[in-house]
Amino acid sequence: MRRHNALHSMSAVILGVIATCLLVNSAFAEPKNIRHPKSRPIIMWIDPLDFLPGDSSVNTSYNAVSSGVGSGLSGLIIQSTTTGDTGSSGGNKVVEKGIQVPPGYLLKGVRVCYELANARSFITQIRLAQVQNPPSSATVLLDDATDQTNAGPLCVNSQATSIDPGIGGVLLSFRVNFADTSDRIVVRAVGLNLEPKP
Image (cartoon, rainbow, N blue to C red; front, top):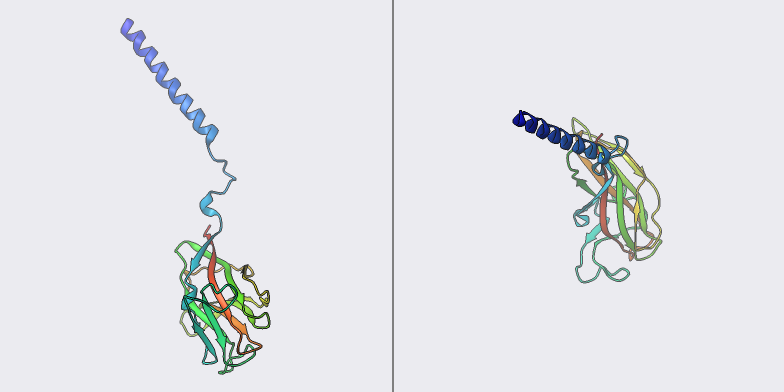
């Protein structure tokens, strides 16, 4: 009889502990309407030094000692042998690169950090285009034609977009407009604004 009572008491204690644990877990559980931190937008910085010139009128270079602009901090130095925003081939005067996005993320925009030698020469367009299947064309999904005439140094975000990079390769280009061939545009950092797929 005593053994039966002891087992009964022990069972009651165990059940009490379990009930307490469940109540504590319930009290500290995350409400369903709160987004998990992983669902928040993030920025992924990419290499700004491997942009390629769009044609022979655009020159890109790098100098680890001094970019020759502002405090001299290094970066991608963009120059042009002609004025305006049209290249020698007749197309946009750009620097361009293909970008990589981690699986499971949407591309929501671009962040560029730059400095101008003179505000008369500047970035005049941030563009994202996605290569189609078959790869004979690319669809423009971001065409931000905001003139970045603030001499800086500063970082700016492009207009918002939403691109699924799993559908096809994505090309990022900066169109530049030069008023004087002695001017320089220095791109110091480029980031991708990303958001997890729902």
